[in-house]
Amino acid sequence: MDTTRTEGVISPIPIAEFFFPTGNKRQCTVSLFGDDSGGNPYNWSFAQLELGTTEHETRIELMRRLDAISKRYETQNWYAPVPIQFNGRIVLPPQLNNPISISNETGRIWRGAEADGIMLPYGSGFLISTGGCPIIIATDGEQVCAAHAGLESVVPWGGDVVANIAAEFTDPQKVIVRVFYAIRRERYKFELNSTHAVRSLHVLDALYKHGYWDCVSTQEPLVDVIDIPALIARRVKVLGMIKANQDEDEIFLPKKHAHDTRDPKPLNSYRNLIAVTWR
Image (tube, rainbow, N blue to C red; front, side, top):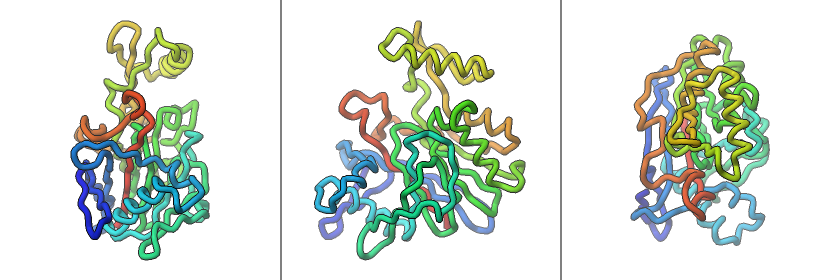
């Protein structure tokens, strides 16, 4: 990822950026931030926001970068639900009632609720740090929902986030859905001869039993891969919403300068940042 410096402050530049028209001359800008210029790894994990002291070096650096992003997109209010439970919840802005000041000059990040998504107010932004989980943007031309969409969030016997998104709109048949920045399907491996074989078998067995076998493919003997965007598309169709046509460059993470949980240690704990603005 490229960065520029102004008076000693790093200004991140996205490694990918796409635009989603939402009607009435409005659009969502969906931006991905990963490594620094020259491919130097940077960890966007929001766990650093919870360090408890403004003097902590890594927290200060993250806040500087978020401040630069806030200025870049001229957005003061950013909503960042906490998706650690993969519960599929969609919340409203008042439910994120724990503000974190980005700086004295710009806005705030609103935290507080354990949820996957937010009904995004016009003129505001959605922030999430991810390790390969895609996000979903849904709109009926009047409202926008932005949500984290990890595997456990998406499956109907788990968080069922796609159904929860549909429930937020008066007429789901008018809702257009796009998916951004998923782990590439060839990297989302479930190895049946590893120490995680029990979990892998449980996940794969559930997908087959519930009829989502076409979202799984065998990459090599005893190694299956799961296509999360394909699973989301199936749920969108079942629920009567509209899955927009997209290029794979939008749907999947870039092959360079982005992180996912299948990276080698210690980088498998590193996170990207996805920033969505609606203006």
